[in-house]
Length: 252
Image (spheres, rainbow, N blue to C red):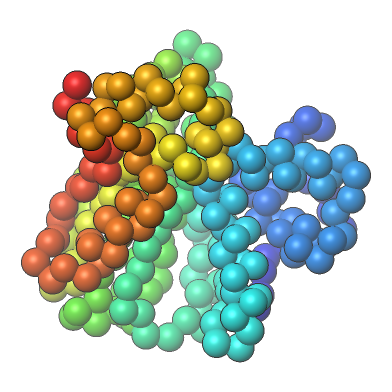
């Protein structure tokens, strides 16, 4: 197993949080127990907030448990120039899922260019560079799933970059389906996932109003998203589709 990290280096942009990029850089130290005190506390606080990084850590742990049967590779999508070398040893690819997340809060009035650039680079350029790097290792029956989100249809205060990027993911899936044919490309856009680390800690005050305006009367669960991704990867006639996994939340 390999992981990109900066051994013994603390690179936080401020002293009260860590970024997704720093999670990638510090993952080996964290899993080895080398992060202690405030550094470890801030790292774990970030995992409680960021579903994507929590999932990333769990994937690395699972890779370690599986031993020699799999190889884990940590890639920072916001540094697309590093993606090609990082994936150089990857062999043939049957299915590719690109699932990155960064809970950017950015408004037009208080625009943080650095944060916006990070998110745009990670999801639009990073996703595209991964596919570009691996396209020669995909075959005619391969499939790709891109993760977006429903903020593209239901913006909220501070979602300027998230809304824009998720709209871009929708378009990216369609153009890739044309350019890469017969390889299938689809996108999945989950709603509020009630049992995810981020939303579950918010509890009923946040989740009950969502259920009440969802026709199914229940919150989306992580297994629902997994089932949707499996469907998009394996159904040979679904292509260029943007699938909403929200229980009909957008209808009301």
